Length: 230
Image (tube, rainbow, N blue to C red; front, side, top):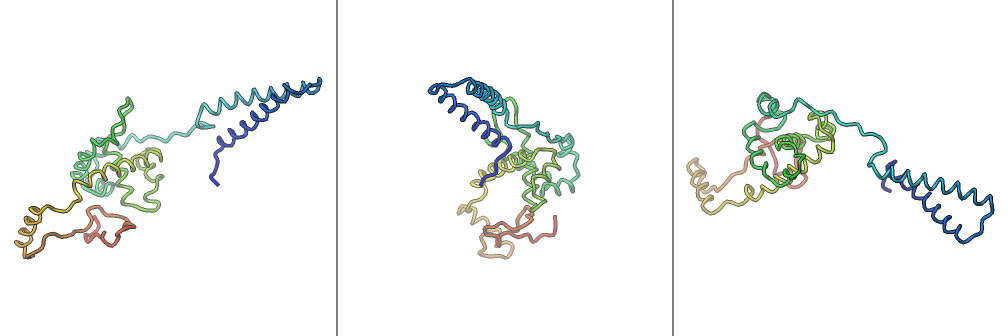
């Protein structure tokens, strides 16, 4: 059974009170009431009015208590992260060098998922990309929403949104980069491989360029990294 929030339970209870009040109001139009009954009805209507006010109050907000806002980071801004972070730390955080990272940013920055056409613009594309890549390269607690929340100073929901947007943008690039070579490209590759002593070879497979914490569930045997730790 789905777990109900405190707000949902309160709305249900208030709804029950109003339903009972509505039924009693219909009965009062039919039955003759004595003095004691009229007093009980006045008390009931008073409770119903309070229930109506409570219902309007609860429905006016999504939360019963004030939310604790995540402390926003002032350290990981564009200058500090992209310009002043050391190459070693940058690669450790993004699993790629700075030039490759900037190239990926350039490829996806104009994707529709990063355009909301509102006065409150989205974060610069480099940040969702860095957050998502950091999660791709980890698993378990290393890829948890809480870990990214603490590292980047953003809320858990934002971590999830960033990851989903980056995945969508990268998937839409697959048609450009993941395809079979044309006949001319195969001939050119074959000539190049022949010059290296591999006559008749039309291609080769290298390890993954981004170290993954664990192999994918589908075709996992095709993903490997022969390089030493980057």
